[in-house]
Length: 97
Image 1 (cartoon, one colour):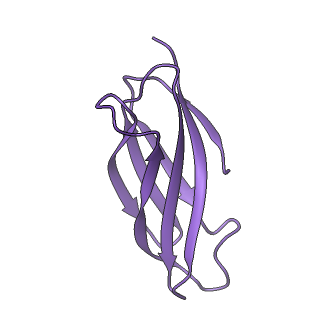
Image 2 (cartoon, rainbow, N blue to C red):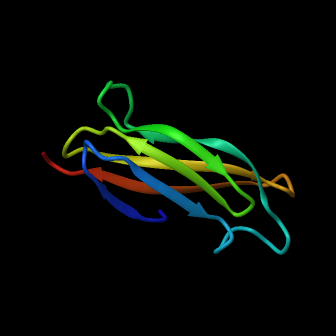
């Protein structure tokens, strides 16, 4: 896991994963965002990705929603210029009302 974050249900959480810190090698760069997966999912009020972007060293996601008291596992995946697939996870806990 890369981190633990607290989010209020009504706020937006912008989060950037910096792959250059420990994952990218030499001149390798991030070339594609392979998506963000949130567990659990399914309820209309659950945490969701509402925007995402990628640059040569980072992947960025904007999260909204979330059920108060619920803990979500969030996984990000990217492809690199050397065709490697990198994956990292964070935990987001949605605070009470």
